[in-house]
Structure formats: C-alpha cells, structure tokens
Amino acid sequence: MEHEITGHSLKAYKIWKNPHMTPWKKVREIAVEVLIIVFAVSLAAFLERRREVSNEQHQVKEFLLGLRTDLKSDITEMQEDLKAYQRSNILFSYLEGVKGTDKPMSDSVQKYERGLWSMSELIVNNGRYEGFKSSGKVIQISNTELQNDILDLYQEDIPTLIASTSFYKENKILLFRYLNENIRRHADGSTNLLDVLGSDVVKNMSAILASTEEIARRYNSVIDKSRKIMEEIGKEYPE
Image (tube, rainbow, N blue to C red; front, side):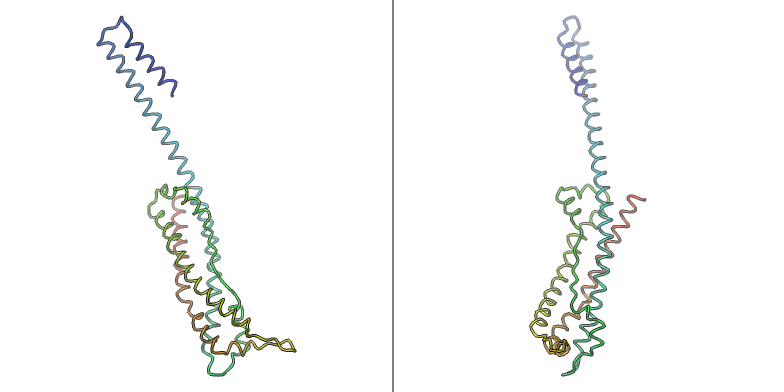
C-alpha cells in the first residue's frame, strides 16, 4: 500500500512539472491522483482498524472463556467453604448454649469437631482478571452489562466477602491460641478439651464464631454473580 501511495504521489508531481499539459488538465489529473491517494490511505486505515478490532475481540474471547473456567473452579471452592461455615455454625451455636458449669457433650463435639479446627478462606483465581485489567483491556468487552458485572464481582463483591472471612479468621485464630494455651494432656492420653470448651471464654468466642449468616449471605451473593457472568459468557460464545 505504501508503494502504491508513493507511486501516485510521484505521478502527481510529474503531471505538475509536465510543460506540455494545460493548467486545467494538470489540475484534473492531479485531483484524480490525490483522490486515489486519499482513498488508499483511508482504505489502509480502515483495514488496519478492522485487524486491530479483530485481534482485540479474539483476546476478549480468550479472556472470557478462561474466566468462565476460573469462576467454575471458584464456585466449587465457595460451595465447600459454605459447608465448612455451616458446620462451624452448628458447633459454636451449641457451645455458646452450654448452660452454667455444664461441659459440652462429648458425642456432640466429636460430631462437629472438624468445624472447631478448620479454617476456610476463599483463594480467588483472579490472576487472569488482574492481568487483563492491568493491560487496560476490560473496556474492550463490548457487552456493557457483562463488563460491569465482572468489575463489580472482582472489585466489590469478592473484596467484601474476603473482608468478612478475614474478621472471622482473626477470631478463630484467637480461639486456637486460647485452646493451645489451656488444653492439657493427661497421663492416660485423654485431654481436658471438654472442660476448656465449657469455659466462659470459649462461650464468648463461640457467640462471635456462631454468627456466620452474613458470611453465608456474601458467599451466596458471589456465587450467584459468578453464575450470572458464566451465563452471559455462554450467550456471547455459545458452544
């Protein structure tokens, strides 16, 4: 294309310098060459832009299809986290409700003891999103609703969820520390775990750790938003 433009420019110059052509004919011939050059430049710009747009949309497609895989994995993890918080809720609600100097029932503690020692925290698969966002390519997603949903998920919904679980985690760490400092192992291999779990300190901590409704609500909100995004991606790129 550049060679053709140069050729027409040179031809216009030769016409201008031709002493055997009338001025009017020179103007007409040069005008034709200029129009050809303008058309060639416009066509080249149009084709280049189409190539850029095509490349951008290919990158958008690769990102969105990869994001759908990330979200599917995150949903699986979040569903497991929800189960863990449900177990914790049952256990700590029970411990909070132990009356007076009574000790928790051994079988009840054993049934949900996994909720006592477990620590659930969402590890987001956000590397793909962060890379795409940092390159400034999120705005290339032509579906505005999908673009906004993705931004809301990663910049508002997930950070809010993580803030809630971080607060819960801090209180769980305090409980771990207290248990570690106060549980004693007897000569026969048994421990005073039930005595420690029946203490006022654990009951007070349990009142906080039993309050998982807000965490569950935010988990479900993130799951619902993730599914919505996956559905929108599916509409954009049907299998």
